Structures are given as structure tokens and as C-alpha cells.
Length: 328
Image (cartoon, rainbow, N blue to C red; front, side, top):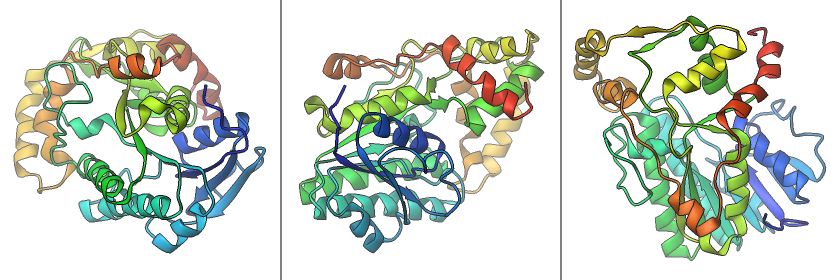
């Protein structure tokens, strides 16, 4: 575990799902946290944590990034636009990363940890993926701009002597996750998925992602390296959704044959605008039924780190939140 006692750490996206957990873990480890919040009123889960100062700011404003970074030891950049067109997401994901990296360099920050995603690899790989595999993001604006953000960071690091590390998480789930907890639980209750559900899924518990981010801040072997952050080996969709279904006491499964969806996906992909999510639907269908793992050998070998939370424990930890939301 890295020693962050009394170190000043800036966290962008601090009021988001992952960002809030990162802030909590930093507070628990004795760091002094500057938690960047773009809008007021979204800091409910972090405002009362010890040594956490919530700071208003936007990653698209370079002057604000300079101000918040002044005197900081480290920065974890987890802010991102998850939706919107290519221009909207580029503004936050690419230009915002440029601002954070340039400000970190100008202020002498020791290391910047950048939260990326396995989505930079796209949907076309059919064998296991390591960090050395080239980016192939396809057309989805999120995939494209997160890949662009990594290129921006590495260019800044080379030109301005900034130390950095990159983490590429899979499907981050846990309490307060809308997509990979609420939606997956609702989907599991319906029990409808592609085929027999034997394709690979890539769920990783939010506390594990945060733990890796903190380790990357100071580990000597993490300097200028990128790390996947997923289960290895990958569970199947049947296993992932089955854990959620078990919470509700059900095991219903209706497998939609892939051949029924293939013509529709191909048509939607062909007619979709460039740089749109639907443009990748033709690749998404086989991806969801494919069997691959985003390998974790690099984190194991260099950092002696693997995700610690089992799928069973992680989903069980979501139960109180699902009850709070009235879903369970």
C-alpha cells in the first residue's frame, strides 16, 4: 500500500461514481484531498470526509486547473464525458486531459494517474488483450475520445517531462453505479440476453479500481505505464447477470439467438452517422458473445496487484443500494 499520509492529491471527477470512492480511499489513507467538482450540490458523499476540500472547477478551463493544481503532490484524473456527440466528448475527454496534464506539469506534480478504459481497444479483438495491443476504438465517441486522451497525455508527458500512469478499467460496478449495477440488475430480473450468455463480461468492483489508482500514484514500476483493470479470467455474462438474478431469487434465462439480431445490427450500423455509437453495432454483437480476457499479467508482475473483490462479494455489496433504490 502506498504511503500518502499528508500528501496533497487533486482528484478530478471527484463527485462521480468512481471519483467519490477514490476520494474516500485517499481520505482513509491520510491524504489531503482537493476534490474537483464541476457543479455545486453533488458532493454529498465526500463533503464531510476528513482532509477533503471540495473545490469548484472545470477541466475544460486551464486557468482553473493551474489554480487547483498549485502545490499538489499528485493528481488522479477521473473526470470524463460518458455521452454526447464527438465534439462534446472531445472537449472534456481530450482537451480536458490536455489542461489537467499541462497544469500538472507546470505545477511540478510528481505523477498524474489517468483513468482510461478498456474501450480504447474497441470491439474487434477476438483474442486476449494485453496493454501492448494497439488501440482500435472504432466509431463510438467515448471510445475515440478516451483513446485520444491517452495520446494527449503521453504527448504532454514527453514534451513537458510529466510522470504519469494509466489505468484501463472494465465495467465498473458497485453501489451507486447506474449502468453496471442498476441496469444490470433490472436486466437480470428480466432474464433476457444473447444466446446462452457464454460470452465474456468484464465487471470490476469500484473499490478495486480506486485501490489500483492509489497504488499507481507512487509505485516506481508504474511510471509511464498503462495497466488493464479487469477480472482475469473473465466471467461470462451468464455468471455476471446470474449473481444479480440471485439477489432477487430468480434464475430465469431467455436467450435471444444471435442470428435474429445480426441483420438489424448490420442495417443500423450501415445507416448510422460517422462518429456515432450505433456505427459500431455490427462489431458489438460478436464482441458480446466472444470469449476473451483483458489480461492482468502486467499488474501482477510489476505491481503485485490483482482485483481483490470476487464477483459474488461485489454483487452482494450492491444489495443495500438496490434496496435503497427500491429495486430489490
